[in-house]
Length: 295
Image (cartoon, rainbow, N blue to C red; front, top):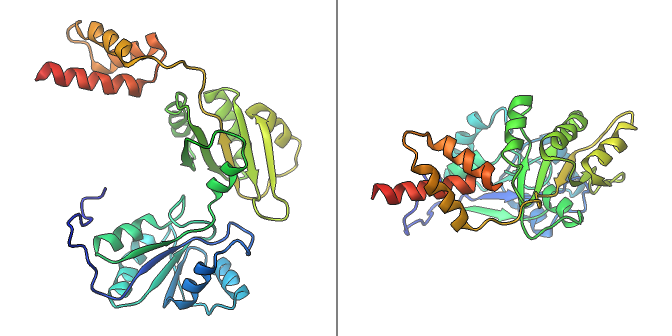
């Protein structure tokens, strides 16, 4: 939690301005809630990531357009301006171009600033691409991890994926259609040929879900001249590892820590490889043991 957020029990906002975080349809205009329509109608201003797209949605529902542009290229500049309007008593709705604001979209900075200024922030829930895709994926839904967009640079992307190799929860990624083929090949090379589901053009006329292994989905996409539409890719977690008792990890670490002047990172890597467990699990135990030794 950012250090500038209020944590005391006297957090009571005395001004009338409220920030509403409003989910809008992924694509199908009917996937908006009645509450969202009412809020968009009643607020003083709508802070929109894409004023043209949101303008078309609001025109469809005959909502007067009163926009502030708010996107990744101007959020640093616009955030204090919007906060000033909220302090002056204006109610403002934050919307992204599709789905729920702040989820791989601008919004975090503004919400954090509003909370730091003791301005009420109210969620208006609705559509989300990651939940929409997960609900029909056929992959485990009881536990999942949302990754969103990975870095564009290959080296950074590969490193992020390596850190996810041991993750046993369902993985959810966003990717652009232009980079999708290469991304799937990278996933296969780093994570292995796992089961996956690709959701494309969700809620639109040409909605499509491709299911199979990563290589099978890649083969289907390779036959196409072009890939269009926003893409959500879900990948099965790593189920290959049997659980290793914490006692076994602890015993192996204690033995390794008896060798003097060895870097902790080297010990963690050695034990993780030896027991075929994640480095994070070993590292947590190593820090605990070190703390016990120091005390």
